[in-house]
Length: 132
Image 1 (cartoon, helix red, strand yellow):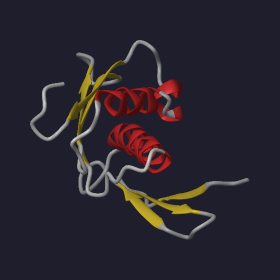
Image 2 (spheres, one colour):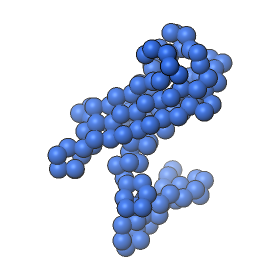
Image 3 (cartoon, helix red, strand yellow):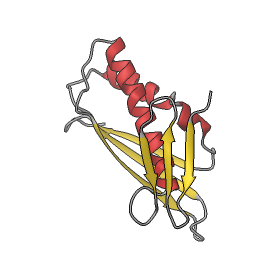
Image 4 (cartoon, rainbow, N blue to C red):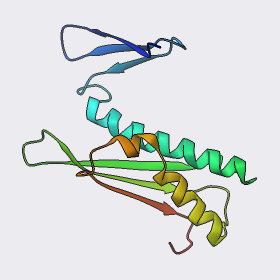
């Protein structure tokens, strides 16, 4: 099934359309998301969906959970070398078992598992002031 249609605007932009839903995304490194930022965002959002799935399965509510994601590059700015994602968890306090479950859910993200192993991916959690 086709997922996305992209149209180059002749400058720095690409208008993308998610074919199944019709939702649109404009990619332009000078006025919005760059392709590498989309990669980092894909990791962070995919992982957050996995956290939400874990929460629902275990009767937890993490509505309002946020993330902050950053990326680092090689010296030539040609390759992502590091991705750091910090999840600020809503809905706590969480038991140690739940924390381990969230960490395992994060590690099962398909985007995470599709990225090169050479990329240093650091995922951490802020459990609202609790020690990690």
